[in-house]
Image (tube, rainbow, N blue to C red; front, side, top):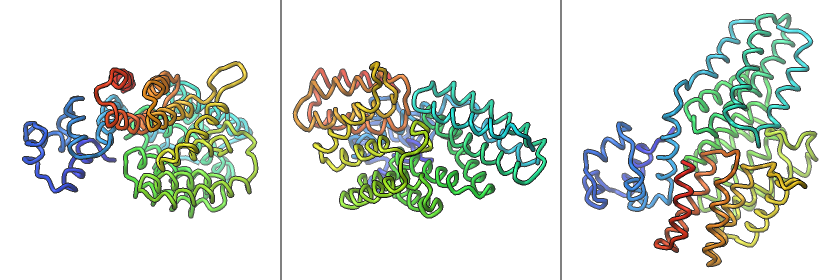
Length: 389
C-alpha cells in the first residue's frame, strides 16, 4: 500500500525529475529526500506541502504523510488476522448461530456513529466467540454459517481499522474477509471485500486500481446489493480520472440497480445500500465534476437525512464530507467565509474515517490555497485540518 515515499517517487519520476533536481527546486537536502522516498524518515509539515506543490499532486502527498503518521501508531497490525487464522484449525455449533448473526448485524448498524476503537474491540471479542464455537462445530452447514459470521465481522473490523488509519491491519483483515467469503461461497462478503479494495485505493489516489477493483467486485458479486456500492466506487474513480461522462453514466446505472432492489430491511447497516447512501456518493462525484448545483443539492440532502428530529447527527462521517463539499462549492462561488465555516465544522465530527475525511479535506485545502493563499480564513482552515491529523 503506497506510503508518502512511494507516492513521492512516482510523482517525481512522472515529471522526469532527479532527486538532485527536486532538491534544487524545493530547496532541500538531496540525502534527506532520498531517505523520505525510502521510508527511513517522515517529512515535516512544511516540507510535505512544498513537495506536494512542486510535484503538483494536489494534496495527495499531504494526505499520504498524515496517514503514514496514523499507521505508525498501529503496534499490532496482525491481531485480527491471527484470530481469523485460528478458525481454520477447527470444525461447531449449536443454536447460538442465529443470535450471533443478529449481534453481527447490530454491530454493523453501529458503524456510522459508534467510537471506532470501541467498535473494533467489541468486534474482535465476538470473533473470539466464533473461534470458540468453531471448535465445537458438528456439521458442514453450521461450519459455513460461522464462517459467514466471521466474514462479516472481518469486514466490519477492517473498515474500522482503516478509519483509524491502521492500514496494515485493515488490508490484512480485508484479505482474510475475502478468503472467508470465497471459502463460504458467499458472494456478498466477497463483493464487500472487493469494495474495500476499491475504497482503499481511492483514498490513496490509486484511481486506476480503484476502478479495476470496483469492476472486478461487480463481476464477483452479481446482483447482490453490494453491487450498487461497487458501481458508486466506479463512479468516484472515473470522476477522479477525469471521465465525467463515464461517472454520470455509472451513477445512473447504479441508481437504477438500487431502485430495482427496493429498500433494505436495515438501512442503517453499513453493509446495505439505501437511497441516502446513494445521495452521498452522487454528491462526491458531482463535486469532482464541478457540477456545483447538483453537488450542493446532494450535500444538503445528506445533511438533512443525517440529522434526527432532535437535531442529533446520526451519520457524522457522511455529514462531515457533506460539509466539506459545501465548503468547496462555496469557494467556487467566491464565498470564502462560508466555505471556511463549513470546512471547520466538518472537523468537529464525533466519528470519522480518517482516510476519506483527509481525501476530501485535501481537495478543499488545495482550492483554498489556490484561490486565497494569504487570507486569515485559509490559515484557520489549515489549523483545524492540522488538528485532525
